[in-house]
Length: 130
Image (cartoon, rainbow, N blue to C red; front, side):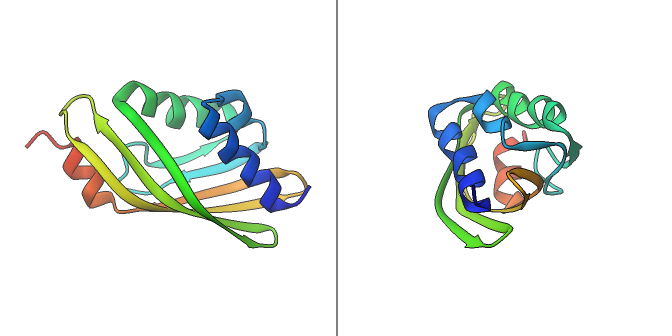
């Protein structure tokens, strides 16, 4: 299985709403980094921390939260996903539609690192109550 296949399996599971499938390719010690300024900002170690601090949190705080990845670039052990985040922040009722880039690092058949890049100003406008 190539790095591209590993990452594609994660996005395919995301498209199905399959959380277990999204977590399956993550190494036990994966370093998952959400960009500073994003609501889930930080680096989380391990699939359980990612599930709790990223996926479950997004589900609690957003209506219709979607990560739609429209392009997947194969760079060997590194894979880049490009797409759009959208959703409505429950606390404010404000929506967002922002571009995103994901950088994945894969060793063997497991994701060992993930880093997110997005327009945090547009996300902040949706999550801010002022």
